[in-house]
Length: 186
Length: 332
Image 1: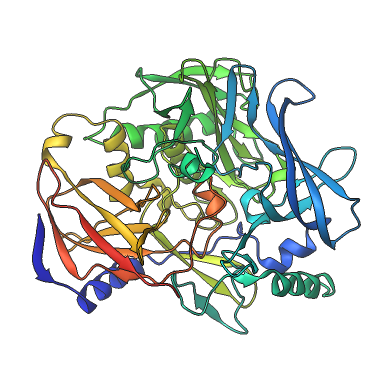
Image 2: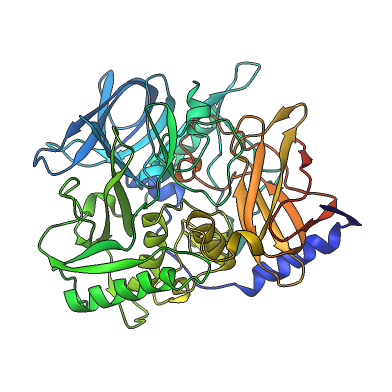
């Protein structure tokens, strides 16, 4: 049953008060955007052409090898294709799924932040944190959504979901942001 | 079937496949032979093994004890029937995907140096059965079982991972702030299934919140859970279309309990089960502050809309749901 009572501002206040009572400590695990850029050996905008599952070299586990056709290299000097690996996949009758690991499919347009050194294949930095999906607006503009969170100039700034100021970011602006961080010393 | 539909359900990395409205909290599921199968243990108690591996400051015995306490926390939910059994120590590792043993243990994953811990499932794609589920705790981080301020609390992180182990995905009931000095700080969490952990030395993640209890109970209902709790159901719309992936939260005006869910199909339908009878404030918001891949296996989630409160309070009866209602949001 839906009550006929109307709510509004009071509801909002209640929610915010409840949440603020839970205020707690610091975490260092999320990757800040500049660190994401600096900590990656390769940053690539491209399109997935293949995602293929296989057993790992020690045959104990399953991984997926993703091949990307490079549209633009934002950091590093890859060839026309880049290959990286992700945990999980499907081999034979068994599917291995790791919670929190993004899945890739042929045709996906993405910007990926990759780390790792040869001979091992690189992987996406911070799993889903180093993946930005590229979408196209009805008028044909390529955008990154959700856009990376901005770092405040000073102090701390609460992240508000639905903030009208935070919108999908044009791929050109995203590329500029990445390159600005590439050029910045840590 | 479009990939969006295939992924709409439930979380992270799992392929799903129905367009019907689905219950809340993200409950993990897979598509097996075209049918959606919840990732759910069908036989209890679920046996788990503890690795003999240790980490600096945490012996294998301390590890097992912390994990047992985390399992006990979920088992103690009075309205859920899930149960666990410690099957012994093993030299096997969590990365052995198909040995038939569900192993919890420390492992070195230096290549995943932003991942504290992770849960994996091996699914038999013929039967849909869970073959095993393993959890690794990354020794790239410092761990503690005593609340040391310089290390992550093992039991807290284990409680989150065991939520995955029983089939729950991530919850969006948390708030964060960005810091000029760098980093993102969690300032509130109303679910242990919020994907960003609290910081070192914080043991609050050991305690389940109402959202967690509702999720576990909806997956493994026990006793009078279905009779004593109720649901809200509705649809999120942006203009004339449904909005897949919108986060919906229900706030109990009497107790302050928060339970979250998502619109989980193209029509924007949502259902949040396991609510105590009462009146609720409903809020809809986009996941525009997160990697949506941490919640959904979907490349095209629309997060470009404003947070919106439903303009009425919603009464939840015991043992059922009130009429469905629409929440209309606007684009930014």
